[in-house]
Amino acid sequence: MIPFDFDYYKPDTLLEAIDLFQDLSEQGKMPMYYGGGTEIISMARANSIYTGAVIDIKGIPECCEFGFSGSNLVIGSAITLTKIVESGLFPMLGITIGRIADHTIQGKITLGGNLAGTVIYRESVLPLLISESQVVIAGNYGTRQAPISELFDGRMRREPGELIVKLIIDSTYTNLPFFHRKTTKIDKIDYPLVTVVAMKKDDRILAGFSGLCDHPFRSIEMEDSLNEKGLTREVRIKNAMSHIPAPVQEDIHGSGNYRRFVLNNILMDVLKM
Amino acid sequence: MMQLCGTDTIELEVNGEKRKVTVRAADTLLHTLREKLGLTGAKPGCENGDCGACTVLLDGWPIKSCLMLAAEAVGHSITTIEGLKNAPMQKAFFENWGFQCGFCTSGFIMTCHALATIHPGADDDTMADWLQSNICRCTSYEEIQNAVKQVLGKGDSSGVQGVVSMKEK
Image (cartoon, rainbow over all chains, first blue to last red; front, side):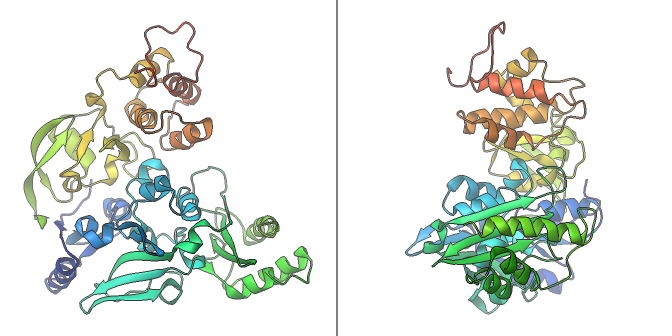
């Protein structure tokens, strides 16, 4: 049971949502946009967060868009992981998010929620980073569109009151050869020890990583090393691992050395793509 | 725009019936089903989305009712274990001894019922994947798996009487 009260709003338009966020902020309600709500509910129940109002975005048409439009795949931020998995429209994304939590939670977690949440792994961002997706964001200025690589630096950077509306993916990325491996400490359903998602485009390997550092990332330097074809696989991997952009995590899931060992083995398989 | 401030009355469709219920905006669906509507089949286990004891169906898909606000369920069709009314999966659990203490059973049945309805041709990997959603403290996993296989028409149902698989239905 959530130990404090909040108000619930379900706006019908983007404008309503943005205006509401501003009004509620001015009233001191500390509003939160609400997608699937799994993180908000579980953290509220534990009294780890407080809000005086939630703004459910599942009634906003733009946040519920899903499908191919021209040469792009458009996925609204309120689309659930289950819907993406079951659609089969973007297999690399489907397989990646199909390993986040379990089936019953995937039916509630939304793509926008996973990207914007506080849990550090955010595995859904990996296919979006390597497919060079665009993000549409709304604020009191209207909407803007930017490459996800500009907005995501470990977490989605937004100004207060800004809302992730949808992701736009060039459809050519949706059916390229890809690789996905999520390793966990014991259980199949767990946070990742190391997750690697990779894709081959124009004979170049593109790769994203979660679980390795305290944030998911794509590293062009690591990709350059992996794609240096004149060298042996072992050297390419050694060089790539020298470009890991942040300290490797040391926690209950595994030591830094063990994570490096696991990553080394996964990259061996990536190079066989 | 729908809004719910403080405590208010909403209408939920539960097991095919329209039910008016007064809730706090912060009330979870699990709390509302159990404490306001008297439907105690969905169990409060971890209340953190881990155990699956509170699983219900929302428009036919399994969700954990501890991680859903009652307000969010307005306009959707909710099915609890009380609404299954002797479905093939319930009979299969009974006939395969797919339970011990029974606390997790309704959640497991809701997940498995949804699997058999949504993916009647589910292979073993899909079944194993879906069964990860629920936890049984008494470890009845093998019997639960047998029950699901029976309904999916993949199990050895020799000696089992009166079970109609979803495929035959």
